[in-house]
Image (tube, rainbow, N blue to C red; front, side, top):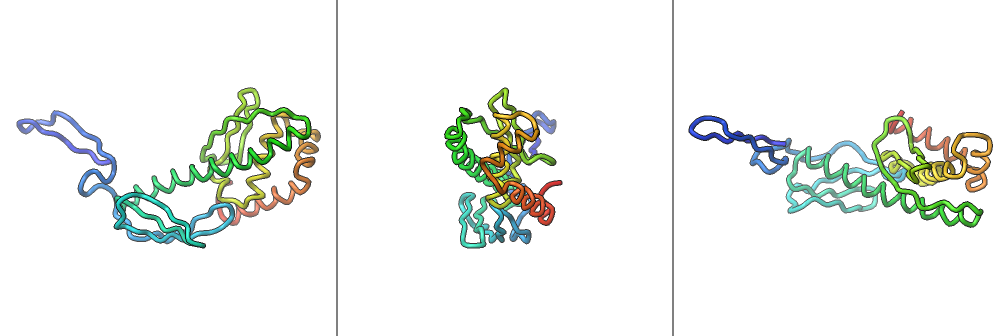
Length: 197
């Protein structure tokens, strides 16, 4: 955010807060991004287009071509955060919609839950079964698809069994017999890539 002081007869009368890029020199210019990004277990490098007229992202094999306007570090971080959030919502909803019919076929009438997404530090997901809500960790969208499917299933199973008893894990296993492999993959992937924990 930039700040402009408005003076009248030499005295400050107002302060205006402007979004980065609205002031002529606001924000830190950016020319390249050296770090790599993850999505559904795959790694991508970023190529910047800094002469764009608006923000955008184009996927080309293992590369994301990110268009920026204005070409500032702040705009890049904001754009990427919002883009990841959209990808996470789409990915998690797809997983929910794959699992729900299987629950219904097994005789569990689970209503489609509300979904909230947060960048959590410790948990991959949480179920608030009394509110019909699951919260998912934004960073989960960076992990391989079997990990995403497992965590979504885990949270949906809490609508049937609210604790982590043997009954709960039997239910998880009835839908995903290899859930332990997905859990191990998630822990290893997150540790190696320093995602959370």
